[in-house]
Length: 446
Image (cartoon, rainbow, N blue to C red; front, side, top):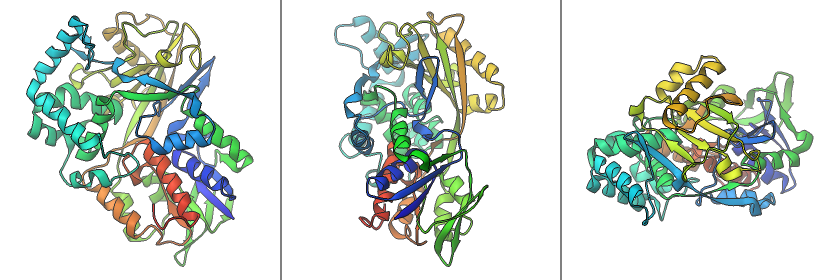
């Protein structure tokens, strides 16, 4: 039993891991020099820093299951997101201050009053009612009644007011979804806001990248990096193999675990109904900036920050990694500050030099953090063309129809990726698992 997996990111590695455990001979082809995709880590000078995915949220059921199967469940450590403060009126405020801190409470109430307390509370209540019980990022069923309602910003402005957009929705969406709320659907917007409002998460002791490393170890020499798949060859409505720069490789089982736009390019003979579904999927790009400093940055309980768009910052959030990993993946007494550029920041700096991006990020951090060092140790810049799936209005329904009714239209071809559900790396991992289960004959669709 042999299978080829195209793409060595979250979905592809999960599919390969599942098939290996069930006796399959699996070869994974990844065009980058390093496997892992969104669960990759950058390692240098004693630092191990996750590049994209960093947190394990409570609802990440499949991610936790894979972590358990890899034997590292005991390495999950709770992480309090309440230390992510929001910049308002030139100061940092805690969205949920402690009951015994009158100064923090006063600052938080000023922020809430800016938005209108009634409007903000109605918004928070709506998000909780939509997400607390039913939300699962590895499924779209819970949000499909919102799927054709337009974009999230227009919905929030109409129902809860423009100040709620400016005060909480825009900065939260830009922080996690790496785009503005007018560029995503209502269901995805609710999901992202709940991720912040629930305030719970965990981190892996050695980073999310440890998951990828463990699966790559399982694969051994069957993990082929630095090799692009030029096309997945289909003939008579059945997979025949893959074409790489090094020649044709015959295969009658191929799992395509790339982003939707890449799948469209490398499967030219995909049936029209599947092409149409994948063509609706859109992504926003991002620049991930890592700034390494010679001090631990956590201060007064702040582990990171969220910057509203009106500040003009090229990035919406930043995180102090030593707050959760000091002495583990971050050398004691040092720190890494990560930030993701979005919107105008991406447009301005996408073709800039790494030094120009570093200088812009450091300058912004120095403006809002009095304790930010004047000198840094080093930096690392990553440009990610398909950063986050933006899930525009109606796309969830179209993809669900493809999954339910056309998933096996091509014999031996199985699609998976974050676009199959709601765009998070939990979505990617769950789709990889489900695709493998179809290959194993345990399911007819993902």
